[in-house]
Image (tube, rainbow, N blue to C red; front, side, top):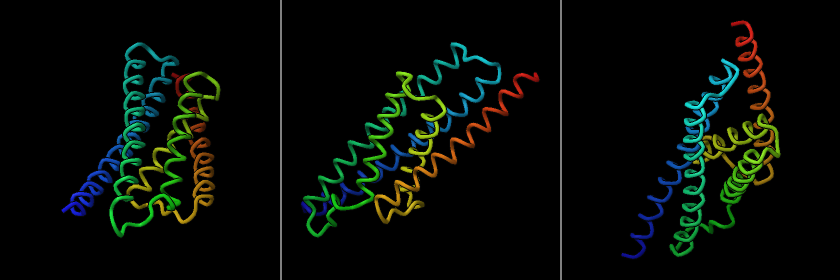
Length: 175
């Protein structure tokens, strides 16, 4: 009976973890889209700022929920007999590392310690990396190879976002 309850709890926690990463990935996508849209007129007005603040609240909520479910999953799997030793899994530690990176970048961006473009690219790449891992689209075989893939993804996304910002500013200047 206890094993069945623990196994069911693990399934529910994995689904909550997936939901939190999807909320984070969706929120960062909408936030970036709204930011680019706000740049069209060259400034962010009060309504746009309020919407972005709500989106960033959802990002913080998703990050906290994701970390709490990570800890709960590890605890449930520790007590579940015959379960894989979750703490030795590269995917688990890489996911937690991304959560720390996302929290750190969020703080650095809020306090204007890093350029906005860098924070945007890291946050966007991080959330979509987490969502891709949870959905099984990004296989993690080793911690350092996953980190290298993440760094390459950040570079590609920052170049793409830079190009989009250039196009948006060009269109705003021509309008």
